[in-house]
Amino acid sequence: FGSTIENKMLFFDLWWKKQVDDKNAKRLIKDAGELSDYLRYKRLVARYALTEPEEKIINTLDVTGISALVKIYDKITNAFTYTVNVNGKKKIMGREQLTTLVRNKNPRIREAAYKSLLTKYQDNKGVIGQIYQNIVLNWKNEGIDMRGFKNPISIQNISNDVDDKTIDVMLEVCKKNAPVFQKYFQQKAKRVGVKKLKRYDLYAPSKKSAAEKNYTFDQGTKLVLDSLNRFSPKIAEYASRVFNENHIDYSLRHGKRDGAFCSTPLPYITPFVLINYTGKSRDVFTLAHEIGHAVHSVAASEKSILVSDAPLPLAETASTYSELLLYDNISNQISDGEKASMLSDKIDDFYATIGRQSFFTLFEIEAHNQIANSITVDDISNIYRKNLKEQFGNSVDISDDFGIEWSCIPHFYHSPFYCYSYSFGNLLAVSLFQTYKNEGDDFVSTYTDILSAGGSQKPEKLLKDHGLDISKSKFWQSGFDYIKKQVDDLAKL
Image (cartoon, rainbow, N blue to C red; front, side, top):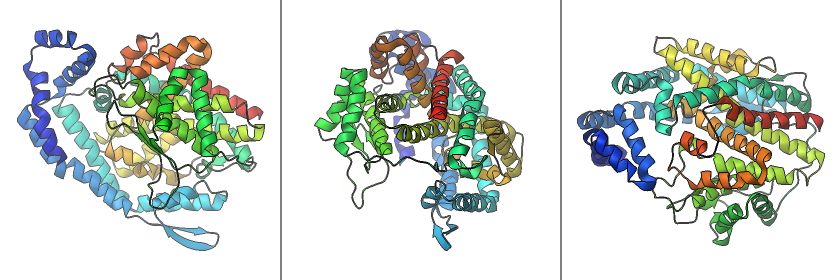
């Protein structure tokens, strides 16, 4: 059905990309107002478009080709069950339940959970590895050989409307700052009660965790809105609309879906937010995160529906920024024990969304380059194992079984190079927050303007118009300067 819709809509894209000459395109773009950048982007991808018959053939073949491979991967891995001994009892479970065990207080259970996961994928590496190799080769054959993209990651960069240089610089800064997280993991070993973390212990809880404070939904809401209001009453007013119009579903009930999300059906409709609020401090941060997404949508609501949505690299800006504002507000209202627990969770999140995702992307770059030269599944695992050692240095012991972990990451199969968007969006938000801490209230209007732009401008241009150059390492380093300070602050608690 999806390919049928795409084929029906191809005529405009192909007309604009192929049949309108440069002179007329420039004239139309100049007079298109807020849609100028939208049309510019359409012209940008024109150089990678094929003829209409060729595009239709690709769309049709993808259904039984690349899309089918991804479905087969999902079907195989979703059927996996895992056996783990928990407190002397053998339990069989799916991956979602297994994932909760890697945060268990018992190190034997954590290790058993990881070993069950990795052994299952290692036992099936032949077919799962072959699927990945064919996905990578398809990415190359269509994207580079047929369409003419410069390199594998450029395909995703063009899709995100960001320059190769910007992503290269961002990834290089992430790689350079791996020691920031390594220092944190060395601290965490002491909190977990071991001399040195094993990779199995990465998400282990601290032995001396403070008694967790509970927050009613009204208390959590007040904390979030107060944090936003301290920064900008206008931003807080955007957030208040979600609550005032009863566009939030927070209660726990049987049959309700897990997780949290924010949905904006149309620009002029106040966003809807779903969370499962249990009263834990992490739920308050989840509330801030999703309300941040809502704020972004409301801020850009006056833009055309074609450009109101923020592009993928900017999609996490307001959500992460709102969490940072919340922590900045709440950290002075809690005990040192609570602060240590909260800060540890926060740095864990920074690692998961910035450090880990950037190294995922560095692995993908190497894997795509090597698979094009014909390598084995074991070779891919060796590349991944080397990547882990660069990422963790001497801070964490990496056992050989983690070499196959790459095959457990669905994003590598579903959407190559998607992972850097998490690093980009979260590090961007942290860097913007650091700018706010340096500039104070003068930064508020800049931040509001960035959100209000939605997806109407290319990220580099949008930020540069406000004096922020994301093609330079200095900008990204400011985000890591903030994270480094949090790691140092945690060491003092």
